[in-house]
Length: 311
Ligand code: NAP
Image (cartoon, rainbow, N blue to C red; front, side, top):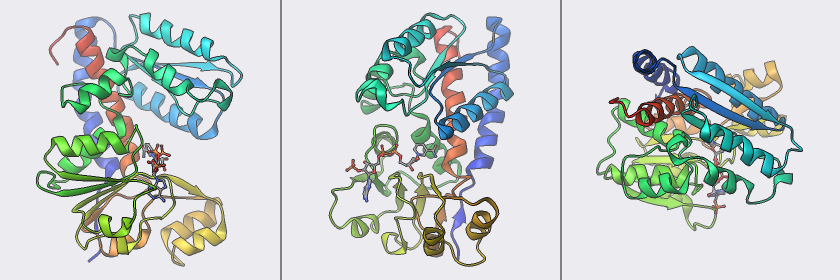
């Protein structure tokens, strides 16, 4: 039986519909909508799309959302000044600096910028204070993608407590925080990475397998226990026909999309995994839409807490 599809788009709609009344109530009490300040440096095409989607989702949900744009040649000092302005702004409850930053800003630029954002406006949940609070399982702003995964699992009635969870990938923005969130919900968690030996064997022990590595269709059927829930975080754009042919069967939706558009998105999980998994997130339409919904939820939460209001 093919895997149940975990429909991130419809769960994200639900979440956005739920926060609508709370956004209106905040605006009624405060005389202003909750505000999100997004900073985009340079003109990375993928970042342009992500930022446009975030701005329009925020606008649709009744938030104030502003974009501060800096040239690709901007200095780190200029970027830090922009962050400082948003830190001081009364109208902005959440600040998001879109990554990646241009290489010319230096290797540790991202870390320095995330460190400069006020923790109570850090709606990406990347500030070390918020990460530390997450480690200790205290209430905090948590990174949007991993908290979206938890919403997806819980709202799809996937058991987390007592489950064996394997997380493939150990990035600060997905792998580590999702491992902590699963652990706090009483899963037994193993984290794998590029130096893990026998990865397929470890993954095949998982009841819940989360994959966030950025390698197209890397996880194949032999990594997956029959009936497991598989969360595919990866988003990889394929433009090479030979690669597309290796992954998508003739006549499949992926092949058709490629033939129509000249490119196709694929996750880190091979489409054939649907033949063995019990439940699986699609790419696109799985984890991605939840990331934006959780960003809005975080911004509302930051606004309510900054205003000292009950939620
Ligand atoms: P990242 O920072 O590049 O981290 C990749 C992780 O994967 C690293 O821990 C790396 O291990 C591990 N890895 C790489 N190759 C591996 C292999 N062959 N076997 C096992 N582990 C391997 O990536 P990220 O930012 O977490 O993103 C991962 C993917 O998720 C990307 O495709 C990204 O586009 C996508 N993403 C999607 C969303 C969304 O909203 N849908 C949000 C964020 C990210 P080492 O630590 O050993 O190098």
